[in-house]
Image 1 (spheres, helix red, strand yellow):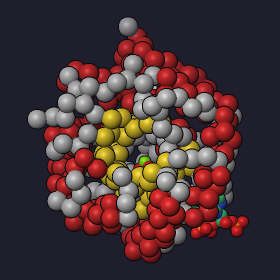
Image 2 (cartoon, rainbow, N blue to C red):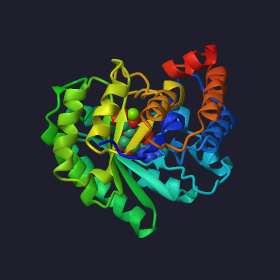
Image 3 (cartoon, rainbow, N blue to C red):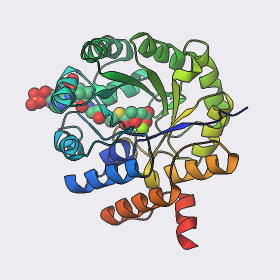
Image 4 (cartoon, protein in one colour):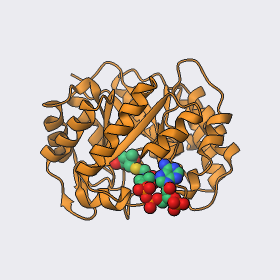
Length: 298
Ligand code: HMG
Ligand code: MG
């Protein structure tokens, strides 16, 4: 049976915008985040406290957080790759952070300059420091089924890294198919391995739609009981360190599918379409959401 209800984690303002080359005004980011929250998304990943040399688009992270209005019941987590990021996030008032590593050694070196086990040691310090401040920590594992450098990633390796993040006290570990190469078969095998070592209630699916497999992969995750789904409004996104990575699965497409399947999600689809329209207009591009495009034509 599928979960009766799911939590959608909106990652567009972070995973989506981090990949945009043209600078986006802070006010545009803030309005996008607020529209997404107003549409009923309970978690909107707002920005990243990463090196501005690596991701110049998100150099205004502190300003974004300062300007977003708090909204009851909505959380605005931010990415913090290291202690410096955590310190900056705490100074900006963050109460929830996300740390990230990968199930692929080569990708980890490209994305963060260190191998998996070194990154886990560093992240353990970041997680402990955050928890000491009462700040909630989410973990991400990238390249959970495939990697642009190394190819196939064994399910046991994804599960090993997920377990390490879980044992650091991450309240949830989000499994990322960074380059969207997975299919329902590889995604199911990966989640089956993970659920042997981390309770399924603490796992999330973070699927990119590069090969058009995003919704199918999400369905595979749902069928194994995964009830937290990451998605990006208008399918914005990608990863600057993964060639060919396009956006996350579009939030509108996920909502449309859940709606049709009778799975509760709490999102107001018309308001979400409004947020998508807003950001596509600001970026001057068409939506990457199939459902959004079809609904707009009606
Ligand atoms: P480092 O080890 O300090 O080394 O950073 P560095 O040489 O890259 O540092 C460069 C400069 O950045 C130094 O300044 C640092 O002090 C500074 P300089 O001394 O040259 O003046 N710096 C920072 N500044 C502000 N905030 C910070 C920070 N850290 C260093 N936090 C690090 C290593 C990982 C931090 C760096 O490489 C970095 O920020 N990389 C960007 C990684 C990134 O943002 N990737 C995309 C997000 S992950 C993702 O998208 C995947 C996900 O969606 C899941 C999926 O799809 O699978 C989550
Ligand atoms: Mg991603």
